[in-house]
Image (cartoon, rainbow, N blue to C red):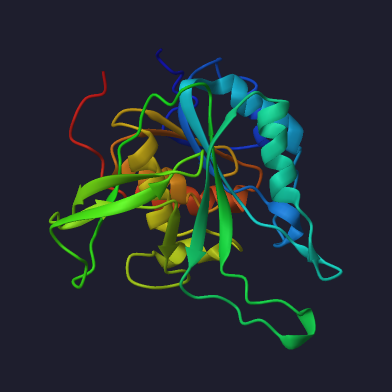
Amino acid sequence: MRYPEDYVDKIIQGDCLEVMKSIPDNSIDLTVTSPPYDNLRTYQGFIFDFKGIAMELYRVTKDGGIVVWVVGDETKSFCETLSSFKQAIYFVENCHFNLLDTMIYKKKSYAPAYPHIMRYASVFEYMFIFSKGKPKTFNELRENKLKNSIGGNVVSSFRQKDGSFIKKSTNRNKKDKSRTNVWEYLTGSHAGEDKEKFKHPASFPNKLAEDHIKTWSNEHDIILDPMCGSGTTLKMAKMLNRRFIGFDISQDYVNIANKRVANVPEKLEEWI
């Protein structure tokens, strides 16, 4: 499907729920977004009709497409709100997405816990992976193995549903291994992060967006971030040779995102 130039590779200022209504059905390959959840930050022009947005995401997502929903929970009266889980349940029971995976975004740097809150320091957020039917794309990411990892053929026992064990032999001579569903990233200002993004009150690491885009999409696919903020998803989509569509209700945030995306060199090829 050809897209109207009013949308593709552009960042549009507006209420994402209203703007999404003009996107064709079954037209988005992948959404990577982090909504303004639980009032943990103060955003310009804050509007968040969660149920409406979730329904629209299902409509615009292609069969086999993916929505990556990065969220956390506010703590009130010493307890978590459970907003993230309520949202996940709504995506599945009301919108008819599948919950493909519940992934964890672990932060290498984090705020300390204080004794009066009676809990340990919070170091992670949820990354819910919703699929519209069976996923059409999964490009497995791998990571280097530790130097002291056991090599050779290793026999491991795995317990079955009936309580019995089955033994499997694994060749561990490979230099890399499959990643798990816990992804750890540096946060804040460091090498690889452009300072422009920190003009927005809440932004996730470039590498987080990059890894999800690599995993769940292919070159030339359409990547959406309906609440794009500083534009990290859109920047990484362009860097990875994907098309992108972004919305944000704040013109200031749109300006930040546009500046970051404009700093990515154009690909020297024609889109077909």
